[in-house]
Amino acid sequence: MLLLGLVVALLVLAVAGAIYQAIATERAERAYPPPGQMVGVGGHSLHINCLGRGSPTVVLDAGSGGFSAHWVRVQREVSGTTRVCSYDRAGMGWSEMGPEPRDAKQISSELHTLLKGANIEGPYVLVGHSFGGLYVRTYAARYPDEVAGVVLVDSSSPKQVSHQPVTRDSNEPQKKQIFAVVPRLARLGVSLPARLGVVRLLSKLDPASPELPQQQRAQIDALTPSTRQWSTSALEFIAPTQTLRLGSLENKPLAVVTAGASEPSWLKQQDDLATLSSNSVHRVVKEATHTSLLYERSDSQATSAAIDDVVAAVRNDRPPAR
Image 1 (cartoon, rainbow, N blue to C red):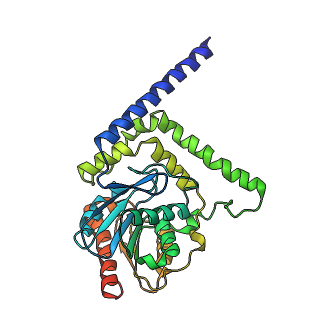
Image 2: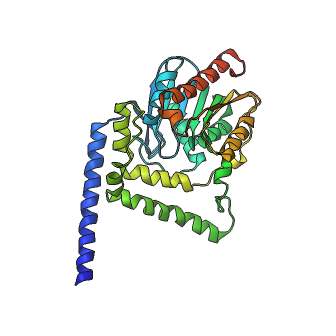
């Protein structure tokens, strides 16, 4: 009887948590509608928000678990120089869930369709923070004529994800079966606490950075605990990456911005990223952290300045300022 009572209690808590999560998510989405526009990309819609005027257009891609609201400081600063657009990958922020696998090829294809559907003409300066750096590099490799310059903000390196033993190119049936099952198990394991409202409750203990403006902090706190965001973050993290096979950026203007408060091994990887173009500059922002490059006022200004310099390099056909 004791065991039965425990099971019933757990079921009641699970149902209550699921109801809480559904209601809280609906209220959050109603309270914080998307500030930009929703654009169909074939079966689902993505959110994009643009500010400023001028060419080339800057496109901002967030890191793992991040979305457009995290770019607020950088976007506002850069909008004084040119048009700048932040967007949410499928399943993140205000964007709807997209098809699997959530890998760099799928994500770059959707961004390509989004930019065309939103009538945002290239060439673009692509900016990627952390994991987003892998996606902008993939875009630049797949659509080189549409990319005028790149900025990598404390970007992840392909070496960090090279440990994944299984790829879509595997000819071994057993490995293919494992690859098909693992993402679904991982998604279930990560999304279950979110579906039951546990993540939303715990997120109150770890709110968005106080360095961000109040409106964006509220948006992040409201949307980050959504089930789709947690599920998608897991799928992106475990998806195979194609960036190991990417070539260089040739002579396209490239700025690498690195957090100074990093381990030597990370700084070495950032040095390696700066060799992707013969027309590059590497700036290490003293005492900056991985997140302060976007959130903190002075560090985000350093990030914005690097973007502005690449925009100027594209406009004037010269190397980025050192």
